[in-house]
Length: 201
Length: 82
Image 1 (cartoon, rainbow over the protein chains, first blue to last red):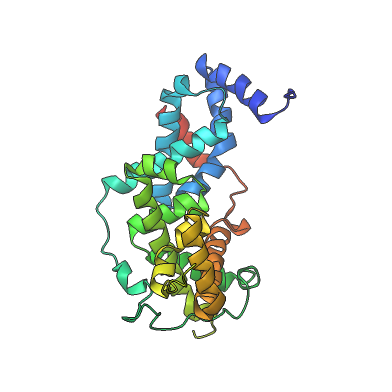
Image 2: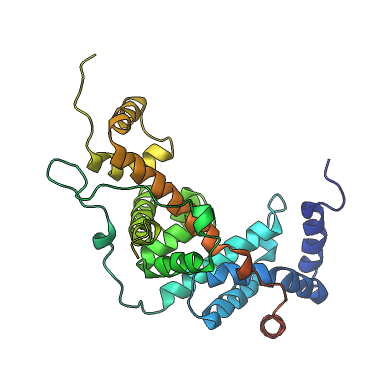
């Protein structure tokens, strides 16, 4: 049984007010979810202004389509998808910056199929390394260096934790293309982190 | 059963995503495991690949990136635009 204070029950009450055009309810929603949605948008943009614009676009879209909200979903999940779509639209609408070629960060192989350079263990676990702010910054900078089409897929799958099918649908591509881009993005990120994690800065 | 040649590091690393997602057919999965039993380099590759995924998630969702206060100017801009 769903208790009266469950997120779904809270959502149902809020959605009913939103649909009836209650402006106070919209303000309540904006105040409640802006910090969380802004945090998501910042993962897609270097610039704070772009992230804020995307959140604003997302709320405008949400307000227009509140009639489409299905009561079986959580409002927070629905808004999460909307802000991601707003970020993707904004990324698509602007000129891409020159990017590095991902090929240089993928593993290289000899003719017999062995790796050119053997992989070695890292000196410490991710958990230990990430206790230092320096490592967090190195990881963020490495993600920022990935070409956009790989960075976006890695962000959607590994950070926002959408499914392969959801990402394929959002990007208008096939699940297989998403899998390939994700794998290559992760491989490139691994290559970028490897010198740091092996202590060869 | 014949001892088919081991898959190469190239094949293992190329199809690693499917292997980790448990999406390989059983026969291919078996070949991956035979390769990993004898290839320390690929074992390390997989370990560091998985660490990479954890590091990306942790670094991008770290507590210091949380926003405690509601950004008032943004809230006002949103409310004015609807």
